[in-house]
Length: 213
DNA sequence: TCGACAATAT
DNA sequence: AATATTGTCG
Image 1 (cartoon, rainbow, N blue to C red):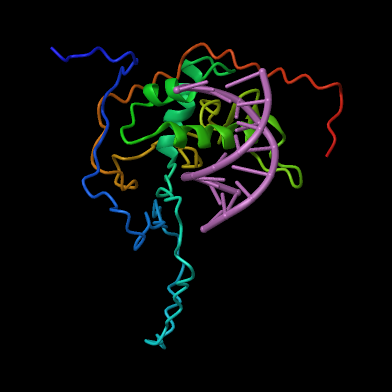
Image 2 (cartoon, rainbow, N blue to C red):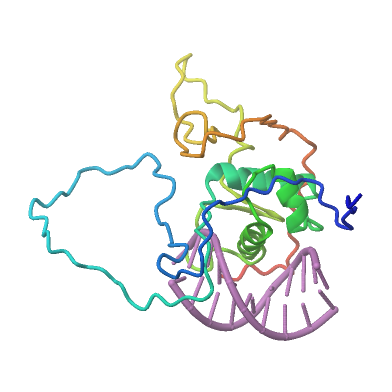
């Protein structure tokens, strides 16, 4: 019985096999597919210049010799990022969060370690050092969190004589349900929003009294 | 082998 | 700027 027990902890085995495998053909190297989430599209006006030059051979067909087949750009949509951060918190928002654990906790199929790894790098880069060296942007950067203020903004609704004013641009509706995310219809298991855990976010960023610009 | 991070490429 | 890839180190 060649059912060898692989000495590997393959807990989740949901590897997706891509049928089309590039047979050493550098014709279309995992072409970088640009253009992910076409959100909202706040295009105020379509500047469609009638003169569409049919001879627009703006092809930048430069050398297409890339041995290192790059993968498609992973579109880290808010939803994905949310899951990412979520997993991070479950793993102890401070550290000890390894790409593997994060990936497993995210339950996103198709996501690889490298992708999580890469994202983790960026995430950490943005969270550790002051992201806004020049120009302060209203971004929340607590000891380990980097995201738009989406939680601690509840209640405190200025009661305007009973009239509710839609002044809450912060609505966590990450969405694959509204149709804003062209996420391949899938992964709709349980979207637990257990974001009410005891937040021990160490907002105690202790810096020797020095908030240099 | 895995993970973090730096450097680099696109 | 964002993401991928590679290389180095622990």
